[in-house]
Image 1: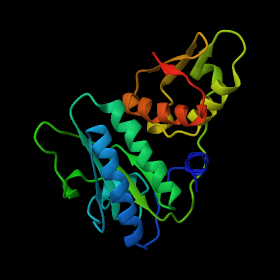
Image 2 (image 1 turned 90 degrees about the vertical axis):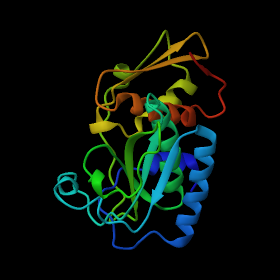
Image 3 (image 1 turned 180 degrees about the horizontal axis):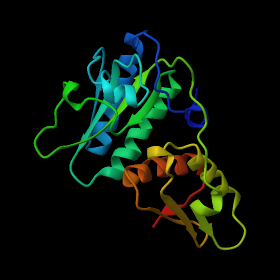
Length: 220
């Protein structure tokens, strides 16, 4: 599965089979995560065969089941957008090798996580992983006019980019972001007020880039 197919087919999954991640998939994920950490200066850590984080009332409230594998995200304070951007790269890579996932902000037990922040690091979020009982379902989207703006007719490349954005996960499906096309190739993207909206901005910007394909635009 290529990355565009992964983007279009990936949906959040919270219920997993009892099958643990295979050694091959663990090796692939760790290799990809190492590259992401090197590129970003963040610290994503894959935790496997660890059932404590997703047991108890919080996991039940979040409708999680049989989740023993997950990624923990750390970084310096103020890097929310980068966590979203680079974390979504990992999420879509996982999808491309057949591993389902879900971004998880609250419904897990922090005490059960064996990996802790290092000096000057902030604990940001967890991404659950596993082989889904199902493949999830598409989320509802706001009207495109509420999510973006451009003067005149919308160019095809921008529409394709926004189609990519519409596939992106956001906290409680709030879609608290806005894109604006300025001139022919300048794009302004901003986070609106809402929980995890800065992290969500990183996620949707990565999807925008994938949807735009080879078109040469720049962020402003």
